[in-house]
Amino acid sequence: MIGMLAAIIIFNAVTFFMKKRLTGNQILHIWMFTIVLQLVFDVYIDLKYHAYWYLSKGIDWMAIPQLFLLVPPVNIIFLNYYPFKKKVKTKAIYIAIWVCAIVLYELLTLIPEPWGYFHYGWWRIWYSILLDPFLFIILIKYYKFICRLEAKAEKHAPT
Image 1 (cartoon, one colour):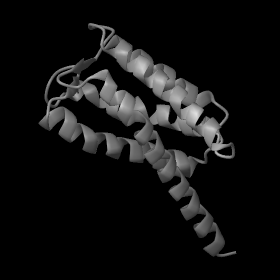
Image 2: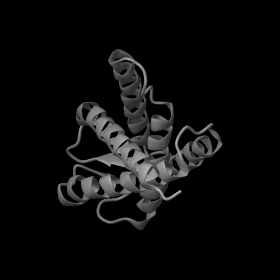
Image 3: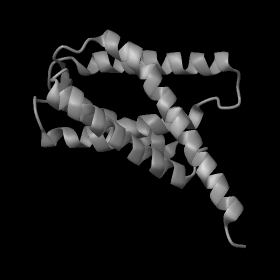
Image 4: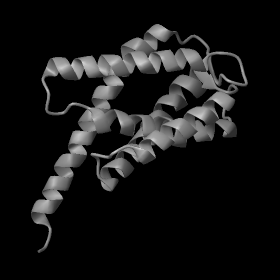
């Protein structure tokens, strides 16, 4: 639990103090999208199939801060520095670096309490290594969708 609270404070502080390239609207959209995607995924993988869990098995109110305050700022940091205008190779390297960082963080969360808060059932780190790049790509696609909607709204906004 201590590790989770420390990570929440650190990631939110970085998000709050970093020079933002994202608009407030984009940040809100990404924050909500992250929560919804994580909830849908965790309902099945965590609660139904018991692949992994936070703190304790089943529905745990103590895991709510992780859901609402840990992953969303990480996604905002990821998108804020994502090299949108660079070559595909640069983008792939950026995603690979982030996957490595997240996997290392996941391994760190597996240490015993009070620092660790994540537990594996049948889930293995290799599943995260394979899945995380796709989750980042989904996040990038959703961000681009938001940008298109914003551009369309600006085009049709009354003057």
